[in-house]
Every structure is written in structure tokens, then in C-alpha cells.
Length: 159
Image (tube, rainbow, N blue to C red; front, side, top):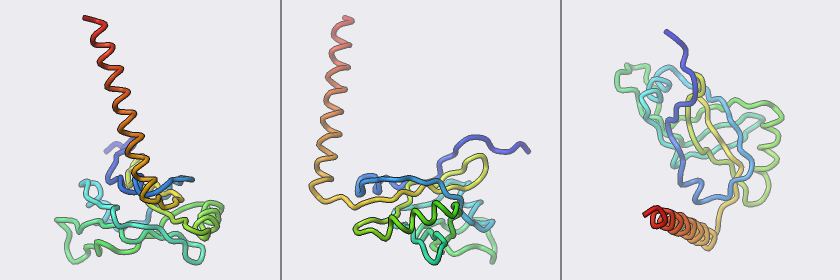
């Protein structure tokens, strides 16, 4: 059977992009068991409550929900178990340094397969205040109105 090519998205954490100012992003490998891989290939996972910690020089994904594999047996995995992330030492040191700063955290953004290997995109982030969120929504709405006006102008000119 030929090896998978390209990127296949499994789960995204859209709320993280809304709730945080994202700074540095990293791509990390993830240590999984066999039934977890099968559940992910079926496209089932949730990153909504997940976060990342750096403990004693190792990076861990906590709170990510990968449901049990439907056709698994007694060897099935625990859905919310802690999973180890694979990064280079320099990246781990940088994450530890930045997450130790005030008001900074590490959040998972997406879970996907890249050329057949499970990957997690993580980012160092600072929490947004309530007015930041409103400002982001207002900017997005204004941009949408501009695009709509441009489309109407082009449409009226061609008639």
C-alpha cells in the first residue's frame, strides 16, 4: 500500500485563535498507541479543552480527547490520557522559557497527519482581554463589509 502524502486535518482548536494572541508556533510529533492512531484516522478528536505543559524537559499534551476506537478490544486507550510531544531540545528550552513568563501559555492549534505521521501544531500564546475579543470581531466584520462592497461594485460594473 502506498504511503500517505500531504496534510490531512483531523481536529482544529478554533477557539484558541479567538481567545489568545498567538506568537511562536511549533510543529510537534505526538506519541500515540495503535488504537489512538486508528481513531484519529477516522477523523475523531477534540482539542477544545487541551493545553500543553513542559515538565522536566519534556513536553506533554493534556486534556486532548481522542475517543476510544469503535472496533478496539481490551487494548483500547483512555480518551483523555496525557500524551508526550516530540520536539528538538532547543524548541523545548524555548517553550519552557516563554511559558514561564507572566500571562503566557502553550495551546494546541491543530492535530493532523503529515505524510502519514501524526503532528500537533502548538503555539505560545497570551490570553486576550474581553475588549481585545470585541475589537477582533469588529475588525473581521469591517473586512467582510469591505469585501462585500468590492464584490457588489465589480458586479454592478459588468452589467
